[in-house]
Length: 261
Image 1 (cartoon, rainbow, N blue to C red):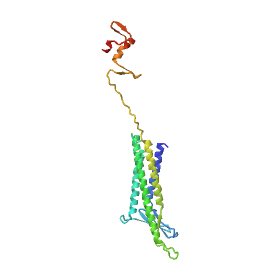
Image 2 (image 1 turned 90 degrees about the vertical axis):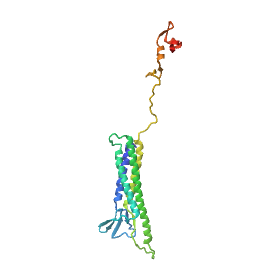
Image 3 (image 1 turned 90 degrees about the horizontal axis):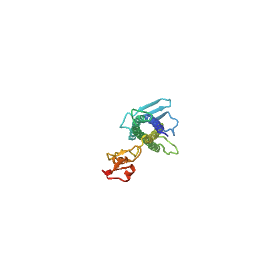
């Protein structure tokens, strides 16, 4: 899979996860009334993070918000905080990932900057997904605890008769939406982090070093590596030393005292 395709796939999956987290946070059916012992009822209760609702058999639904903050259970406030933190981080990561897409060019932004932005958005998506999964799991654990505590008080053994004394609540649709959305956001963040490695430019360990000659009389030929000096160039020409003519080969094989002057 190419870098662009992996980045685009991670962006789309994260976008779907973010939409799911927002939808789960706003939904009212985090906990619904258990109808196991009473399938036919005139009213149906369900609760969310922000309000509780009652739906009558006639189809009329009435909802009432939680107008108190200190009166709510501490676990419910913790779930609210986790979901809000997840939404904020995911939105920031989404904005960063838009500018980090390889198919979008903004000014003179190089690949190294896009790689860093992609890694940042991926980490934000991962944290957001973990926050959503943790918030939904905490609420589910609270429901399970209250369910079994209510079950212990509901059933009384009186000649095999079962009597219901209070309403029990079970998992609502918002919990499953939150789990799926958190998982999608987490997967999208992992894909964005993997893409970061492909966007980063490869660094080489070999660096070019310029070489400067140490002597002033050394000349380099472009065709080879042999260096010649002023004294060697003088011996290549025909010279007359000590009253006789010396050729180039003789001058090199039998140097005279004038060669060292």
